[in-house]
Image (cartoon, rainbow, N blue to C red; front, side, top):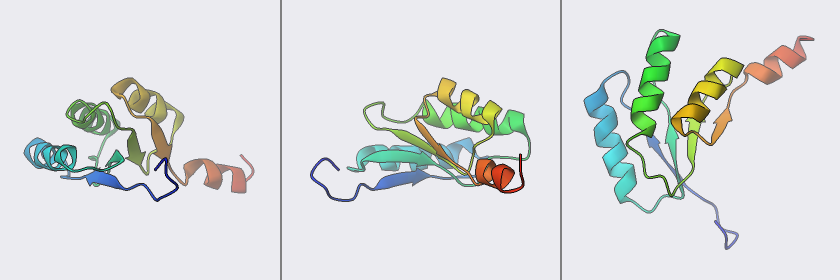
Length: 101
């Protein structure tokens, strides 16, 4: 936080089930988290991943940052940013660099 304390993010999970993600989004929206994080299983295809991220981000408060857990390919970052995601983390860029990419 701004006062030097740690900031907590409420994590929205629920797999590929829109009703579970909606319930999780409503829960974290109602609590005083610093930000939101979209995580959990995001499907078995890029199309499903993008749909879940867009649908989930649309349900979150816009006065808090949104973080996408474990996603970091270039295409995924651009899709997430279009959905309103602010920050990302992923081992992918480090792994590529470590292997000389």
